[in-house]
Length: 233
Image 1 (cartoon, rainbow, N blue to C red):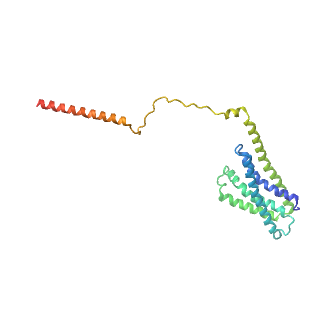
Image 2 (image 1 turned 135 degrees about the vertical axis):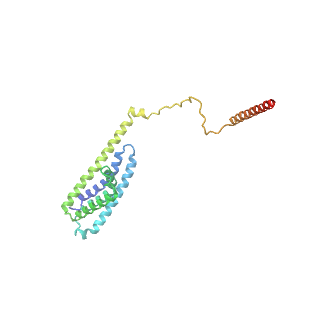
Image 3 (image 1 turned 120 degrees about the horizontal axis):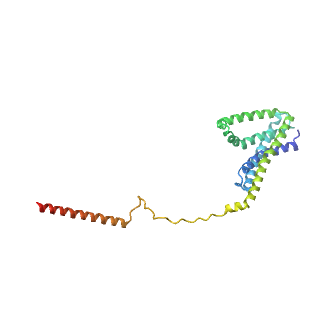
C-alpha cells in the first residue's frame, strides 16, 4: 500500500477514537455540559492523540529499515500502533468500569494490566510480521470503526441538544421554572424554654424570695413549738 491518501485517512481515523470518548461522555450527560466546554476538552484530547500519533510515526520510521527492511508500508503500520496506544489512554478506565458489572476480580489493576499488556504485545508482534495486504485490511477496518464510534455519540449529543432546546420552550417546563411562593407559618404556641437555658434575673429573685419566706416561716414554726414545750414543762 502506498503511503499516500489511503493511509492518511487511516491516520486521521485514529484520532476519531480519542474524540469518541469525549463525545460519548457528553452524550451520556445531556444538559450538563456546554458546547464550549465540549469543544475545549475535545481539542485537548485530539492534541494528545496527535502527539501520540507523531511519536509513533517517528519511532516506526526509525525502526522501519531494521524491522521490515522497507519503507513502503510504514504509514500502514503507524495507524494500528497508534490506535493501541490511544486505546490504553482513553478506554482503559471505561473498560474497567464495564468489567465491574461482570466480575470485580477482572476489573482489578493487578489482573487487567497484565492481560492488556500481553494482548498489546501479541498485537504488536502480529502487526510487525503482517504483510502489506493484511495491514491494508487493518487500516480499512480502523477507518470504518473510527467513523462509527464517533458518529454514534455525535448523533446522540445532537439529538439531546435538540430535545433539550424544544423542552425548554414547552409550557410544562415553563411551569416548573416558576418560583413557588412560600409563606412563613405563624407560631402556634409559646416557645418552651430549654432545660439548659440560663435562668433570668427575675426568676432568681423570685426563687430567692420564696426560699427566704419559707425559711422564715419554718423558723417561726420552730419557735412556737419551743414555747409550747416550755409552757407545758
